[in-house]
Image 1 (cartoon, rainbow, N blue to C red):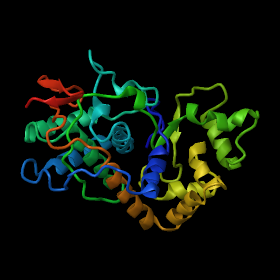
Image 2 (tube, rainbow, N blue to C red):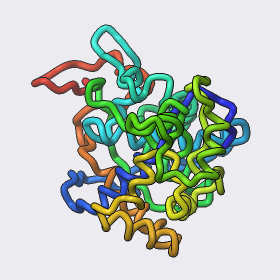
Image 3 (cartoon, one colour):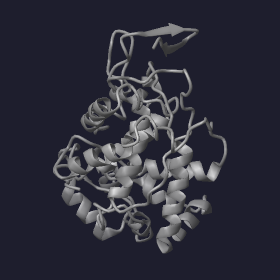
Image 4 (cartoon, one colour):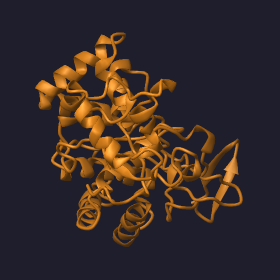
Length: 317
């Protein structure tokens, strides 16, 4: 991942959120989704998604992490319904412009390319919400991470919720998100004592005091282009970029997260297995199925024939 672009701020909250999904267990809504949902109607859907992401990676090494983040943000705001992708309109306040997403969430152009290709191959069939779910899995797989059977059959929301949009993801972060740790941690006038001193000097070079706060740097300096467990071993040597990273290991109040860090550092397979379980559970958060919602023909706007009924919007298709 190149560190030259300043259009994205991202952090570890995807990992934290997904691990919490595992820890809290079965409080999620499991709809009738199936990995075989498109087998007869659009059998090449996953291959089409993978091909477009692979092509995008040739010029944008960050796109995989960005697409995973879109799925995360979509699911944790009113469920996995593609609402994050909606643009502003006369009736919609886009979640894209919520403070945590504005000038930060990215990858929408690649999603549009995927949607265009799928509409050519199998019109009005694959939802935008499912595109995000497939894209997340393919992005992890293409980066050397695990693969899993993605449950499909979600339909698209015709509303958005800007006030509920929030959180970040892994990959990289803007200086604005961690510069307080470098110079004036908790108002002390000193750096965060939990930062490795060599790593602190590196970060101060990237984010000098009074410098450009939109500069971005990799969350994982060890293997920034690979989906692996180095994120966790970095925490053990006090090289967590954000305080919300490092606290997973440095805290004395939550031994559950410390144990997870130690386990995942020692056993990458355990991390991959847990990550897959988490992604599958997350993908089941309150999806629209059956006749609810619609299959958007353009991920950025609702269909022209959408109508409102009983406080929910459904397609009249």
